[in-house]
Image 1: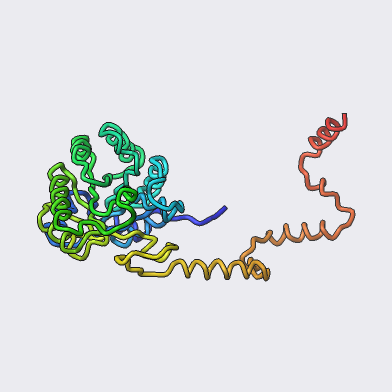
Image 2: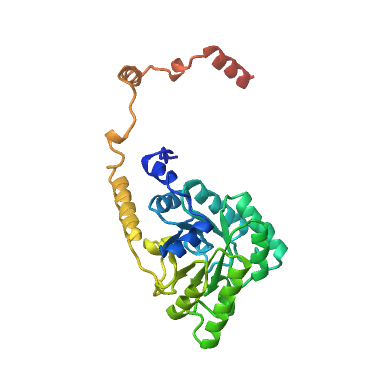
Length: 321
């Protein structure tokens, strides 16, 4: 049990609600103005609130939660229900940023009809303002846009294709592969995608695609030439337990901070220095005096403290019958 809460309507939240809401058209305007787009993943209320209150433009409820939150080896195991659960939590926290939900593996791979139905759930049930899908799925993007569901594409290193790619490998390393990547990006844009994530591709290829498209590109391991950047929150703050890829910049070591806090807490419990008297609740003075008197009286019957003695006697007769 915890008495911790997150008060609504504090100064930071009020400031955010006075700022323009980030939308898919707003991202396009940021590209037009040359303003970099800042994006991060988030998977729960507290993290999403901190991310949103610090001015991040796009919050992605990424299927990376399969690895950094649920402990799987890759993103493939996470389910639609799990993604919906986490998207709801994030949406409750975010006021300004665009909330984008990852469509998990298997939720759109069988048919366009199935993909559309699942995307509707993310918007209707979880409050997502856009969905992200991996690969050059032009027909699906077109169907989603026609259903009024904004779409963010994802090309290059697509984690849901890890088995086909033979691992997490940098993509578009040849001239032919770059030509195909550029063609896929143009096709997604023409189908109505509002933005495209470019992951794990050469800087030069990402810059060429960014220059060609009217919609923004958001890079992760794609160099500084994209219209925006995204990182996994847990990578950013040092809450991962595996070697990090080249493109990750760690801005804090929250893992070390948490380890230290847990160690100090355990030591305080073991040495009985937590909780202290100041961290304990106390009876009012009058009640404390009465209780102490009763405890000091060896003939005290604790039933004297029961208000309804008749009910107690009735119960005793019933149980003895």
